Amino acid sequence: MKKSMFLHVLAYVSLVAVSNAFISPTQNNYITSHHSFKPRHAHKSHFKASIISNLDNDTSKIQEDQEEVDVVVIGSGFGGLSCAALTSKYNLETICLEAHDTPGGVAHSFSRYNNKSTTNGNQKVPFRFDSGPSLISGLSSKSTNPLRQVLDAVNTAESIDWITYDGWIIHDYADGKSFKLTTGVSGLFEQAIEEKAGKDARAEFEYFSKEMLAPNGLTEVSGYIPPFALRGDIGAVRSLFNYLWKFIRIGTKGALLTGPFTVTMDKYNIQNEFVRKWYDYLAFALSGLDAAHTQAAPVAYTIGDLHRKGCILDYPKGGMDTLIEALVKGITNHGGELRLNSRVEKLLLVEKDGDAHCEGVILNNGKVIKTRKGVVCNAPLWNMAKILKDSCEDDAPLCIESAVSLVQEQANDMEMTGAFMHLHLGIPKAGLEDLNLELHYSVLNFDLDVTAEQNLVIISIPTVVDPSLAPEGYHIIHAYTAASENFSDWESFLENNKDPGKVGANPNSKIASKYNEAEGYNQLKDEKAEALWKAIETVIPDVRARAKEDGAVSIVGTPLTHRRYNQRFRGTYGPAPPEGKDVWELPGPITPIKGLLACGDTTFPGIGLPGVAASGTIAANTLVSVDKQLELMSELKSK
Image (cartoon, rainbow, N blue to C red; front, side, top):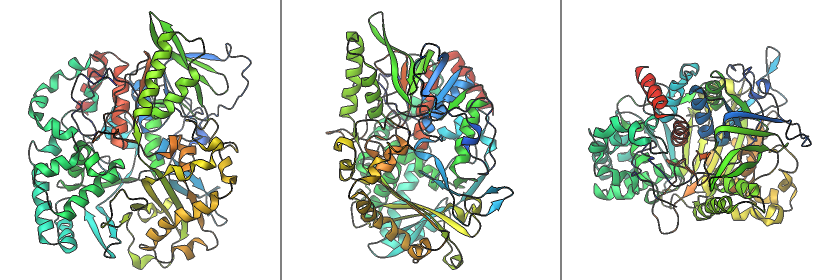
């Protein structure tokens, strides 16, 4: 992979520079949410009610069934939605295509009903589950968080009602005790560290936090360059010109930010075992990797989100759907469209002046959508490589073959983290009042490596703060092991005993779920779910009994479920450093194929809602002139 011309410096939002490298893969499906999309209040109605399904499979009239727009975005993860919202804001005619029947990617929401679901007017109240991340900060008010900046730019930030809270509980299997991370500067977390690990641990943590949060310290520096100033071409020289002084102030800290966080800890002589393990845990929660393999930038940025004065955590009232809806409105309010149940099968690849170009996409039903400006792929690199391979005809010109081969090589060279197990529950909550439940918990054994298989379980109980997410009298719970499941344990249940690189069917179809019928699948699912049940029992001891009560809901998701609904190759959490490297070297938005850009967690700056929103911003900026980019930056600054 060719190296970027600028140093990748920032936190979630750093410098992506004039990257000659290339992008991430695609593979998401689509349905349509035309301009008629209507805002949803809480979760009383769902996206399907407002979106037109694209399920016509007649491929006999491809030329007649064709349209042309400025931009097609493949995939409606947060990176894709951010990109599509901004290209729409830039007055580019945009269609965002999604293979699933709901937007949001890994962070989408879904509903389940029970036989006791109460009615709210004429509509039943479902259990409304978040499928992915729900630990959020920096969104309830204006901030440097790239996702918040996207929402502000497209004028939908104020459509979200935020619930704020001050931390989460960590339970350590090693000593059977729990402690709370409390945000802000109350001293409560420092006191908890002292009670957990002693005075030396507290003193070292306080010293390190002070250094990180100091003026021009690593935390402040990690937010110096906003993603709205970045783009993937030579125009970055001009768009970043006003930040020249910031680059000078970054100085040698740039090397720290782009290196592993352990190097930062070493620089400040952090020796205490608990403090180092704490930052291993924090890094893993952010990236699915320990501190030795996580860039310092996102960790430094997060330290600011947790430990500055007045810091709080945010949860969107109505669940993650509300946040997703705000991004969708950012698309539709500016003339763009979201199309669900619309799976991209191929890209339109042509030769122009000796170079490979992408001129549009072909859907699973044969419909052709051509683009005037470009295609942006929000699918992971591995999936994009498969789509490109399927798009390359036997008699394709050499320039196309070479470009597709280069993408394939990059996909093969990119390592990946482990996969997920999920457990979603809807349980009666009567009698749980005395437990004083919190919204979030982490359960792990600090004596083990944080990356050990099934060590860390993250638990979310959003009905603690938003009862509207479940029928009256119930709690919902989502527990998952992130990035610590071995996909090889599950691959034998797929056809030909391997992941071909894309699901190739509607996620709700029988073909896509065929693995459910494989011998031994349900047994392994039950075995692997045991770690999730055990973790929840540290919070709600009688959870298994409650899950068996009439009206309760229990859903186990495996790495194959995660792969199927989220179009994730091998069910992965995301990219990992290649062999011989300590941290990611992620490409920017530019690919070897002109007219094809990328965003998402396999492009710079990487995993996480802020990171993918930044990647979508960078891709959108690259599609417009620097003048338009600077105009939007000025508008955003004035808000």
